[in-house]
Length: 453
Image (cartoon, rainbow, N blue to C red; front, side, top):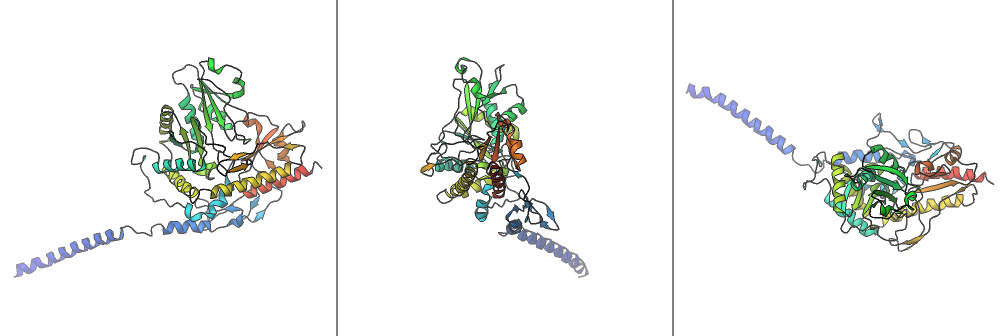
């Protein structure tokens, strides 16, 4: 009997320990199960930041500065103070950059449908389950979008994703350049051209391609009777003047890269779907999300597609999966309903700005704007006047040879025409920044023009 009692207590203690371990394990398992409200804290944090109005003249951001536990307002140009309510009437209007912030109000109106909550474990792999670096859902949605808008033919085209169209510029040049020739491809563009064509080509300093400047210099020479490869950048609508450009060179050794970043109904009438062999697009000028760094190329030839894909793989292992997720969400909002809402909003904004600018400068003898012919738009089913992203302003007087300096003295910062291969009698003014930026620029222009009287 004593022997039995001596073993009862240790056995009981052991059972107690085992039961406690089992209960702890069960507790952990139960409490680690999926909870449908896991995103609430993230949503609460985002909404708290969005509720900071900054007097309507700035924004607070989830990744911005925080002081005493509160997000700090990042104010628009000419506004300051803790809540961006302090206006500086004599400040300079900075309309140099192409930040497409004019679409901010649209996305604030669609806060719920455009919000993205990303799980901490979202797409941690280098690739998708099919071993590609491209979201197939996003690929399909892009094709549907082009079909809806009618601005590009995607039938029989391959799609390459890039970190904005900027990364795709050199990927395309690389793919089109001869790699078994002692002579580099001649990269050209018609003046005025987007500065990145020159700066990027020269920066990469490849033995396979070299920037040669103005495409029109080679129009009279026979590009069909030469072994030289020509790669022509064609921006349509053009940056900076908004005109629907076409390639100027012809011949079997001429290859064109069509940069169609602005070929959307809010910047230009869409006369027909583009059907070029290589076309570049970017979400920045479609939805305004330049910071998301997402663009795509529509490519007809398989060998060019494969070369661009290899370039992207070697360069960055493809585009961020987070960027692709956000692009997918944004394009779903664009496609909601009839797919017209964002284009009606953005077209009205850009048309209003273009009309106001034209009204101001129409009475000036010292300054002029580019002229763009109205065309029938298949998307809106009517003849429409272009509403370009930029004003290509010209100083008409001989004494105003340095046009950027002339307008700088009047409180406006623009981009020098020399950057576009043109001359300093031209300056580019951005029309796609915030409403504050546009209003301040227009105010300074009105004062400048009034001095002519």
